Image (cartoon, rainbow, N blue to C red; front, top):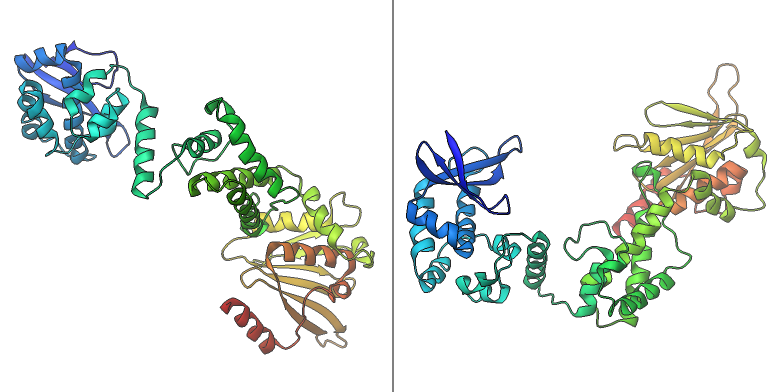
Amino acid sequence: MRDIVFTRRSGWIPNVIREDGQLKLMLGAGADANHEPRTFTFSIGEAHFAVIQEDLARHLLLWSAVLPLCDAAGTRGRLDENAAAALLDPILLSSPSDVDALFQRIPWDRGRLIAHGADIGLLESGEVCAAMRAATETSDGKRAQEYHANRRRAERGTVFGPLDAAVLRYTGQYLHGSTVPRRKPDAVDPALLPEVMRVIATAEQACAGMRIGRDPRRGKRATDKRDWDRMATAVDTAVRRAHPELVDDAVRTVSFLLCTEAADRSRSTPMEDGEKAADDRADSGASASARNATLSFTDDKGVEKKWLPGNPRTAAAEFWEFVGDRSAADNEVFTIEDEERGEGIQLHFYADSIARVTTVQEGEGGSDPEYRVEYSLVDGMSGYRNLVSTFVRGGCAALEQHGSWMSDNAEFERARRQRDAK
């Protein structure tokens, strides 16, 4: 039989229960192997119960000291009740100076006390009892999160000024650097917001006109890492030049914000619009005959897809969607073939290279056709986009001015090794 005999406003602060006539402290901490909360209990005396009822500060201090014992129990272990009971008299019945001395020797959960209003300066100076004079039953988890975030930065030697903190609050990354940044002007002190907006304006001006395209080689929603790095570098350089007082964390969060927004715009843009820029860069004088021919797309697994003349979507857009659907670590070779013209291109994503294949002589009398195969290195996703758009507009002939084509495979391999060694 278990009855709750004392509880506080916050349900997480340990309760006092009576179980089979015995007073016990009951607290929830950690989780079991199924991620369900674990509950621990250990016996207390009437004198301990009296202090817990009357003194919130001592109650919270006991909680913070018992929590490491709960963590040590793990997902299935038992609480060391002897160790927990050994904390009762020193924390609940001893003088403040003795409690302070005890907390210099034992592990304890600092964040729990900070969430309940403890004075951070006094805690860090070892005056735990004095720090708890401002303690509250209600918890402010964000206060503890900010404290831990600042400690992590201090360990790295980073100290924020008011503008640094305001910039990270604006992007929502003050507490967690891995959080996806968003614009949160309401999170910034109104007095600092105009200065934050000047920093953002500097970043926006630096990357005006830049875009982060998709990279179907890594999936349908992946974006081009080179484009991302290029934009991040432009923003970082401009912000550091205009605002040299900002620390690295503040500069990085601004570039992360702008790059994330550009990547989101790319993911939400139809593939046809995304291909338009590449099409516009292609040779405007290329023959249009390839557009009016059936094209065949294949991957390294033998899957094929046809693009037919009259399709409302461009051949390039259809091809890159095919790549986005099919590309994988073991599927990195894709081909576009124009059977009518007897030519095609083969993209080798694993090697950042491309081959163009042209039929020199058709097979006769059962003999195999004769092909000319030429190779070229490709400069990232933007290079692939340009080559694909050029091919579907003008065929292999239009590719002549795009890249250095090598018919000797050994020569090409040497060129590829030299590039990769740089």
